[in-house]
Picture 1: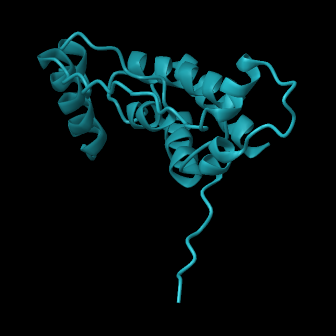
Picture 2: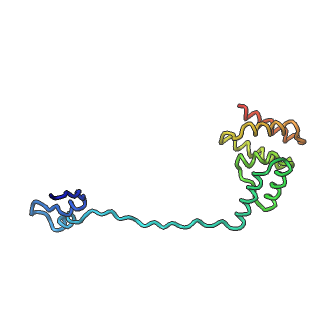
Picture 3: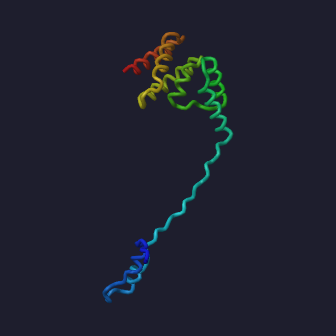
Length: 157
């Protein structure tokens, strides 16, 4: 008993011969060439390790985001600024800056948050509203209270 082997499509192309003798030699050569798929080699570069400055920035930012309470947030934010870094324009970071004790930092965070809310939906809405309400009620500077009230109105709509 003979076993049947599956048909290889590339071998069929090589075995087919022209039935007419009017074919040119170039046509015979192209029909006799088996079909092969050539795979391209890919060069993959290893990820570049972050330098010391980037590692320090990440460490300070993580410390800032994990801090709880106005005093800890202020210390961590000041250490981040002292490292020579600017805060990323992300809602989570700017929301955390609303706890800072320096109202100039809070006011700049309110400006960034206002711009971010034009582009994306608010995250952590209850926390966001609570911090804005606290700023609206207890901020020392009129500008900070006004910005917090305006942003709070934007959140309600």
